[in-house]
Length: 342
Image 1 (cartoon, one colour):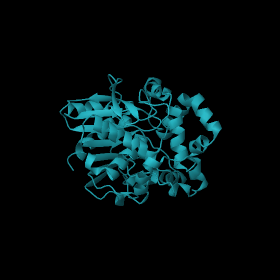
Image 2 (cartoon, rainbow, N blue to C red):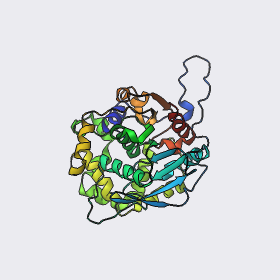
Image 3 (cartoon, rainbow, N blue to C red):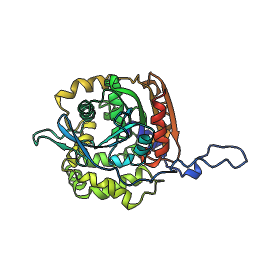
Image 4 (cartoon, helix red, strand yellow):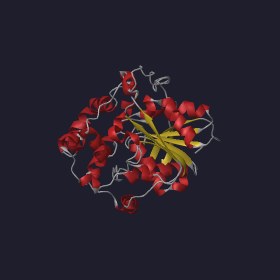
């Protein structure tokens, strides 16, 4: 999910999601105008259509495609514990505007599969990013607009930082959330550490077994915690939860969180990329970042502004939780469109 340190600071400061009706910043005696309902138009669609498959390095990657084949490519990346249904309303909006939209299942999700049983089930950040680069190569997409949140947002940041020639522009929820292993070794205040209970759970074999046995209910709890004002129904959750039945899902998730805490090794072929990121790689491509209630005190974007050195905008979605594209599909789609014109 989001940067451990930034979310911890917000949690320690008393992070609390607010309802849309409570988001106005007006201070006069006159009742402020109601904030716009960013959820308007969400939930219009329930199907992503047919699944396609393509070679992506170590994977056969599953993805959904929308819009004309000749349109400007847009690649939308989901997070944990979510799946491409996060874009079930965003993708049709962009397709209607003429974009070619690609929405893949990351490694460990849905029909995406490893080609070999011998391949390490590695969830480290640059492995995930290179999967996406490999998919672009197979689809003969030289440059795309990228959008994402959570694991997807981190992947978008990494692609923009390490392979800027593949990015026309990006939209990154929560801003710059590239994992820094050294920073993750620094302790947080007790209240902040409480927010990361599941990472410590995953660090244990009991946690691995518990996640494997209870992933449906476990991930539903994460959805409710990360987006307390999003009143999704069981059918909405279950459409995404089917992606967690991937046979590699538990291994990928557990490795991802253990790697972040330096409790599991990465692989040597990714080390050079990780060193570049650890050195503080910046992003120079046109970028729009989005802050939501999930980001707490970091919602205003000032903590990571210096990481974006090119054309840049920051937007704040009050009343919206972590799964921004599914909770606020029209504003997210507009951010993608606007990013192409920065």
